[in-house]
Image (cartoon, rainbow, N blue to C red; front, side):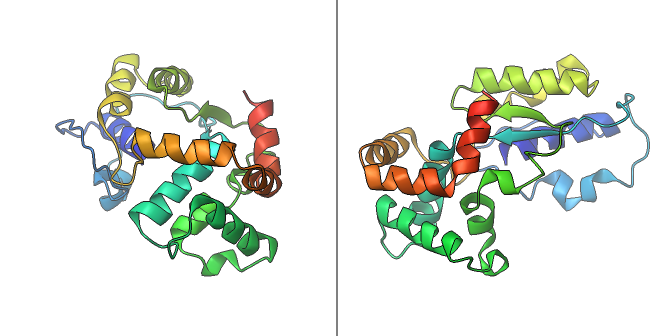
Length: 211
């Protein structure tokens, strides 16, 4: 959702929309752009975009992604019936392995529980650029800035929008201490590691290939 807010600022700059840039610790997906149809009704633009357009995807290390999923779904939303992270891994394994209809899942389960490689043609679309999700926001900023430069976004505007990486957060973001505890718990449990490596085998391979 931070990325959505970054892109929303870029869209408003691109369309010449006046706004006051603000940072928040509770960034939500219903931002100004979402509520206004990405301002598609405004045809005047401030710079020429490339043709074909630049496409990118943010990819995440599979265990870090799972830990974040658990922190949000189980601890923040309390949707896990008191399962610990190991029991949660077993449950997700059951859902995916038994081909439970993903369309019947909640959006959170779909977006965070299924392998990343099932989305956006990650493994087949050769035109995609990749940005590595990281707690190292400076690294993410550099990778996103590289993408934005290829998209011909003025550097000063790109840099201003990317300040959200350093000053904004989402309402469901896990705190550092919880993230450390959950990550350590997974790392010390061979059964849980084995489950995650089976479930997200393609994701692990993809991450390794695109480091």
